[in-house]
Length: 195
Image 1: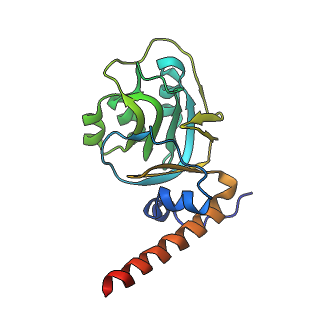
Image 2 (image 1 turned 45 degrees about the vertical axis):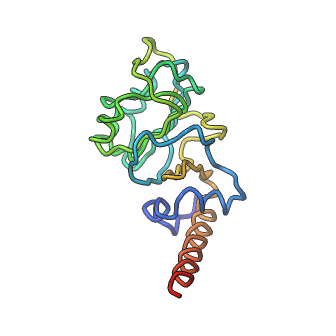
Image 3 (image 1 turned 90 degrees about the vertical axis):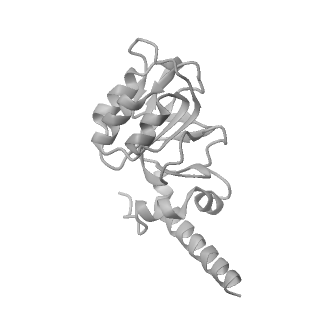
């Protein structure tokens, strides 16, 4: 059983992806090609993973139906950007389920809709073409996203700098050290600018 995390997910979102990567020696960062599609709020939460091959989104729809409050939808689309696998209709379902953010290694569409919903979305690309028909894909499996391995329950931290992954078994250690690093940096900057 995993020890309870002394740092809340809300605080981890404030600490940010950069501090998480710093205390992990640079590990865990998704590649810079996965970016916010609009300037949404930072978030941190456990991953609900999806494989959505070659523009198919049946598994994304299934994950939206199974999602739990506080989760982050993490979609491995193998970098396929010719068809969007998440749009604002699925975004609305995700919000209703309590999902706090979406990360897609592939394409999304309906950016204005995401912003109107207040749903932070990170993706490799946007594309106006919708998903392909079919029932391909899987949920709650180990996925590859942005050059990182993400397992169901690993923690996703996302902000304006990008996305970082914390393996579930490292959460307590990484969160505690990242929190301390952020506080130390903030105190240093406050002291520096106070003079």
